[in-house]
Image (cartoon, rainbow, N blue to C red; front, top):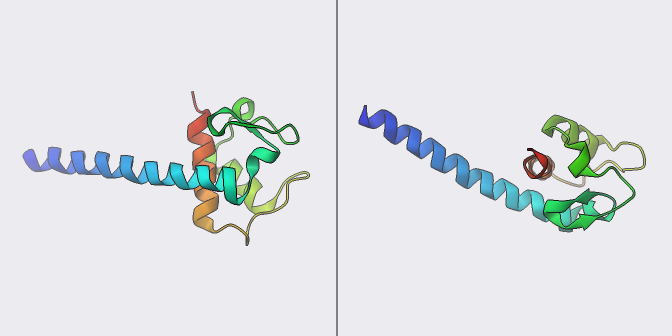
Length: 101
């Protein structure tokens, strides 16, 4: 029984640490590498762009954001090939975690 709790504890701690790293990378991509805030509003990132949708209101799911960032949508250019898959996943995760209730 002790081993079960130890394994659960390790999984919870490692998920938190990995989640924090993913959030940091996502914020860096959002604010610096892709400069998403130029077009989008996202309170957590301190951005107030008015060209694209307000992400706080839209509350996109991770798969939606991955598709939009990778392929572009509307006037948004595609970032696939510019950002790595890891960066795209991280920015999608960051937006999702920053807008979920």
